[in-house]
Image (cartoon, rainbow, N blue to C red; front, side):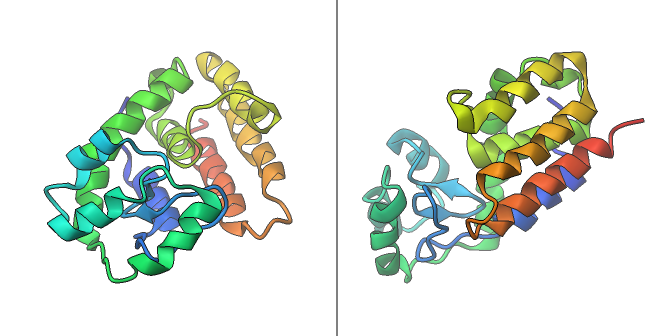
Length: 194
């Protein structure tokens, strides 16, 4: 995959922000730190490789205890983590050096042929995988499957249309950030259409 374009990186930074452990993002999320680094979905080994050299020993140990917690379990633990603060520079370092290569590989696995798309379209699909993961199972993932099928054909308009269609999952649920993010991803894909 191409390196993340400035537009794709800005989109991700704008929507992810810098997450602090004491501020639970909601839904099925775990405790999230840095730039969308969700401890509910990370392994102990990855967390150690990604953050041990950056966090104090005490903060690392405390955050290790919430690995794997999601939803209400994570929500219950968040208030006790307010004293831990993640610096912007540290969050960006982990994102660029650790998360980007990992999630580029996951994007390539989820959407075979993504490497042939324009760089901004690649970045939009990276953003999608970074936010939603790679699962293709069930009704909530039908648009993911349609995108997967459109990628080898280079059908950028279909990819954008499916990103927008995915909003059905969050409409009326108070998750307006996800609705805006899917629109922004679709716009980024459409900006690549010549």
